Image (cartoon, rainbow, N blue to C red; front, side, top):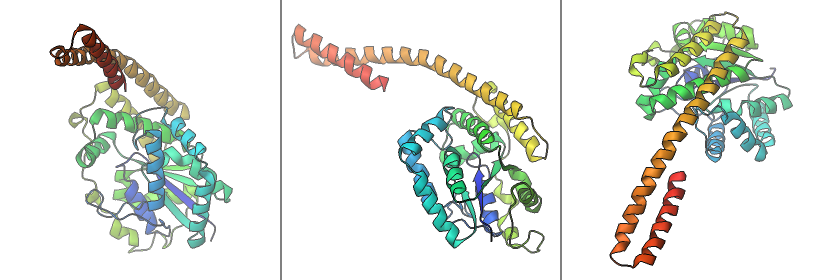
Length: 328
């Protein structure tokens, strides 16, 4: 068979496991997949080697899987290039293709390394396609809070950043799939994936019963879209909602102008830099207060045992140490 590679991407908790699992029951192979747990009882369908590689690279880059930093892609790309990973990734991918001609890769961190995998696949003569999973950001945030103890503001900002970034880097070949639509009728979504990305399924999706029928369960959707339960500022929720609605239209077959997505991305970048600027003012004020408290405490502790010259030295050293510690 002709080689085929599908990359399942999207913010974590967006139904990526359900999609990768469904593809794995329809002729595609997830090599060396991790087992499930209480957060994903049916399985993650993530290759262990890929997950470990991505985790290590993000750790070295100081990045999170759902990182809100809009400069994160450049940070991670620099790390990956410095480590010279393309040959390693290509060798791993080629060995997996020797075992199966149709592969599906999924990992919530995959979007940060999409160029790496796309380049390695093209080196092997394979043009990969991306299946972008979409789920309401309020649902994603609630799910992350429930299972990963994530903070709402960071989760919503991270969702916007990853969602708009995903849209940008998958424009060449993608299908956007709304998670509730996958649960409602997976055959309709697979038909779109086949038409958009040239995917071939075995058994054919019109076979009844089908192995995917046993995997897809509407009960997997355990959260509901409710912004009132999300502790994030209104402007952030509004931007997330507009981003979601634009992607939802595409998942429904509408041709969305890329300029609309670009404007959403630009708005997020502007909001991010404004928020950083306001945070720095409060950060400096907090450092000054903490520095004064640390200096007073150190001076008081030394005052009973040493003379005035020594006290001045203690005070200066305490002030310097406080600035270094709080600066970090």
